[in-house]
Image (tube, rainbow, N blue to C red; front, side):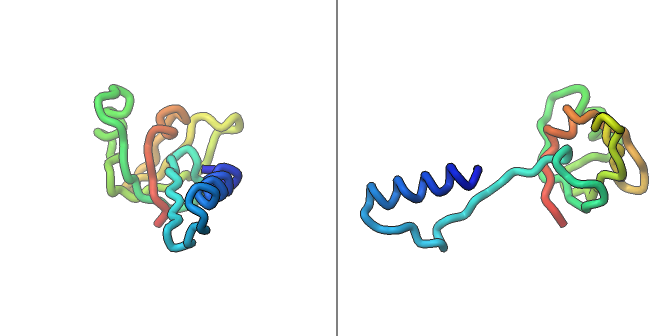
Length: 105
């Protein structure tokens, strides 16, 4: 959610209810995907879609929810990504990495 959309939401809430939004009620959840990580930043796989043959193969190679990963490097054009997982290095298409949700560790 961009900052502009958040401020618009706060303004409309204030107009509708006549009170400001307490900051303790505002929680912005931003999903982060493997393809969004900077090189070398450690993360943990949070979620992966099921049933897609290309992602099934990545699961078989060790990319499972709860697994720690990091991007080693990217190709010059950004695709594929070299991902370190469980002591191995995998080349992952950017389109596949953009479906793997991660959380920073």
